[in-house]
Amino acid sequence: MDFQKLVSQRHSTRSFSNKTVDLSLIKTIIEEAQTTASWVNSQPWKVYVATGQALEKIKEDHLNLIEAGKKSAPIFPVLSRVDWQADQQKNMANWSEALEHSQLDQVEFWQLNRQLFKAPAILYFSLPKDSPDWSILDMGAFVQTATLSANNQGLGTMVAYEFVKFPVELASALEVDSNYDIVIGMAIGYEDDNPINAFRAKRRILDEVLVVKE
Image: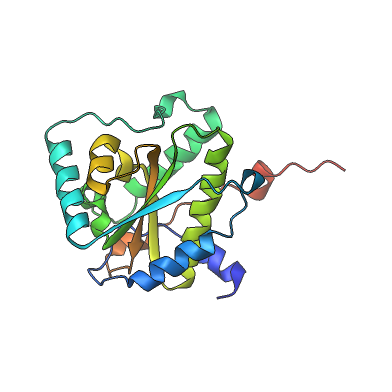
C-alpha cells in the first residue's frame, strides 16, 4: 500500500471478528518492526503473542479481576486526566465529547475494552527491567512500525493500556522472562462490521504541533 494512504487510514480497531490471524503474518509483522531504529542498535524489545486457548484464559482472567474490583498496577504510573497539561486535557475532552455525541452504544464501547476488544490475537511488548528511559522511545517506534505493518497486511490493530492493567497476572500467564516487564499490548485481527470501528479521533492542526525556525 502507498505509505501516505497507509498512514492516513491507520485507526484503532475496537471490535474484531473471530477470524484467526495466521501466525506467519504475525511473524512477518514483527520482522518488519525489527527494522526500527534503537539506541546504539540495542533492540531492547521482546514480544509475546497470545492466541487460541491461552488468549481466552487471559481474557477470562482479565474480566474476573475487573469484576472482583482488583486495582490495576501497570508498570508505568497512570496520570489522572486532570493532572495533564491544559492542551492535552483539551484534546482528551474533545475526544470524549465526540464519543458522547456519536450514535455509538456507550455501554458497548466500554464493555469491549473489558473484553479486550474480542481480539483473536494480542501482541505483548516487553522491555528489560533495567532498561534506560530511552528504551521507551525505542519501544514506541517499534510498536508503531508493527501497527503500520499489520495495517499493510489488511489487519486492524488496537494499542491500549487495557491490555496491561494487571502485569503480575499477565506475566504469569505468558511465562514472561523474569528480567522483562510487559509494558504495552496490541490487539491484532480482522475488523468486524460493528459501527464502533468507524469512530475516528480528530487530530490537532499542524500549526499547533510544528514550530519552524529559519
